[in-house]
Amino acid sequence: MSLAHLDSARPSGPAADVGLGPCIQEGRSLLRLAVPVMLIALVNMGMSVTDAAMVSDIFGADALAAVAVGSDFYSIVFYLGAGILGGLAPFYTAATMRADSAERGRLLRIGWMMVGLIAALFVPLVWFSPDWLAVLGLDTRLLEQGRGYTSAMALTLVPMLGVMLYRTILTAAEKPKVFLKVTVAMLPLNALGNYVFMTGVGPVPAFGPTGTGISTLLVASASLTILILIARRASGRAIAAPDGASVDWRGFVTVLRVGLPIGIATVAEVGVFLAATIYAATLSATDVAAHTLTLRTAGVAYAIPAALLQASMVRMARADSLRDNRTGVVVTSSLVLSLAFGALIVLLLVGGAAPLAEAFFDDSAAGLAAAGLALGLLILLGIMELIFVPGAAAAGLLRGRKDTRLPMIYALVGHWAVGAPLGIYLCEQHDLGIAGIWIGLSAGTLLTTLLTLRRLFVLRPR
Image (cartoon, rainbow, N blue to C red; front, top):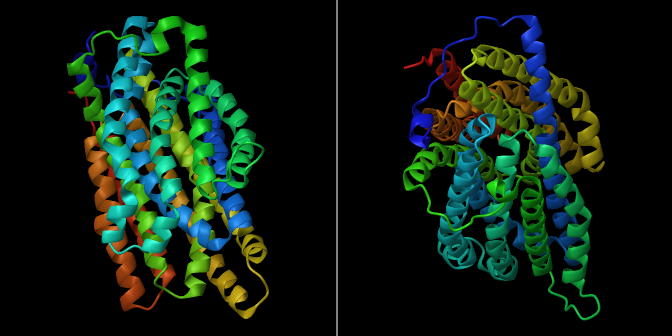
């Protein structure tokens, strides 16, 4: 079966049996897949927090700000590339269900082709970003101070895209624990590398803040090497590395058609929060402080919907490829789990908002003001997550059906055409400050979720 044929395949309709038993069984399968993916995201976040903490502790706030500029831009580019590679997942799941090693090998070659093209386009973009970001008005002093780090992260993009390729296919094959073990093993190595390359140890010179970028590059390269070796040992050439065979260009375009909207949608979601951070910098110190805590908390909470999205995508692709009339069970189980996780996040944030705000800020007048504002924002974040988690699950289900173009449009409209302008309007015209921004973000999330759910339920087989 060709990739083009796979792309045209549609769900055979809702399942006849969506009883409690099948839904519980499917819910367990979703959890077995989602939990390791969530832990992977949290470990990756731990690496990022470790980098920031070590740079700030050793070199100070200015160095952290310089590194943050390059890190934020790299993240946007990386999310776009990772999303594009995510288009492989439903195809690879289908090939795994058919035990078609030749098809899996062809998909891996397509994935490596994508890695090469994305890297060729984006590595120079990140490498020279200090030059053209200065033209856009960013602080040239910070850009120059972080240039070495940014250059290292530009090179890191190559192995990290390879790592994301293997993460995608291992998740699609419902074997994310392999990737989790490799990621956990790299966490202490990343911290050790930061110290060695930032401060200099033995014959290794001190690179300053650039050292954390060098450490990240080496850790990413080591991760990719280990994943390739594991893949070779587990399945031979089928899922190891490209063997030079001819690429299925028609299949490449088919996968790209699915993956590119995923990448754009991901950047739309992440980018609106980055834009909110930039805008918050123009507000009061209290607004900035409260926003910072809320955004960091949102980053931790995001691991749950992101994991459920990927798990839902794989399970839907599996049901769709088997054509076993279980798509209705997958939809029901995924949405029920999403509501349960959303409710859990709300309870945790409502119950923990006050202690978290008190722990994050001091007892000064400014600290108390920021804590009071953060308390409201954290509760609002909980409500936003309750809305967002079902939307993420629905987006994953649609991606499992290779339906990605309209959900991309919904994300752009919800977050950028509605959420961002509404937030600015409430902030500027109604003097709501950063609270207005987060209300706008919540409204954009609500619209995106409603449109995505509508698409999920009105979609019919051709």
